[in-house]
Length: 172
Ligand code: AR6
Image (tube, rainbow, N blue to C red; front, side, top):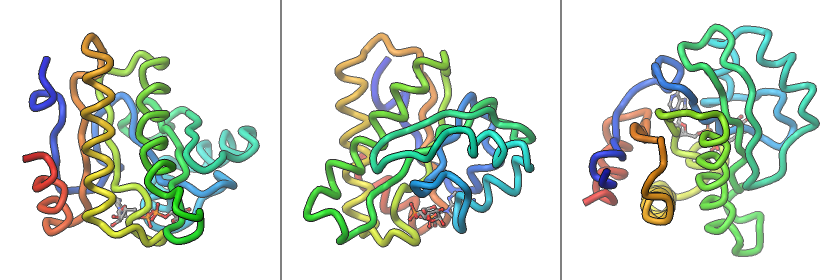
């Protein structure tokens, strides 16, 4: 299967995605927050926070999984993107690690579909074009290295039409 068949950009609310796993742009505490994290916790219900408390936080660029509770998604993969300007130039590598580690965890969960938000591009201030470029490049490289991956439906979920256009431009 080609990258063009696997990778799709869409506009919408990630909490509504009917996929095996959605990715959460969390913080290192994994105890909730605003933005997409807040939306995921409110749609999933209190069971999600309870499970998150047992995880002991998460490092920048790492990923940890929970169940999806009241979400249509079976799993939530929590990853912590870089705070732009706070990692001494390591931001691109940390952001790429978020995508790679989330994909690896999705494989362990036997997922065939996954939806990503635009990690770090809200509160964490990553410039959207740069972040989209890293997201797309990292996903492409991953599937070139793992051509037999079961992940056949990989969605990049933008929260606005303008953001979707930025990501789509990187996919051309
Ligand atoms: N569906 C899809 N995308 C969304 C949604 C949604 N429901 N809501 C927001 N976005 P952000 P970050 C987009 O700030 O920059 C939290 O407080 C949004 O437009 O959610 O990684 C955490 O707890 C933006 O493009 O995450 C952390 O403390 C993208 O999701 C911190 O924010 C990411 O914005 C993480 O900051």
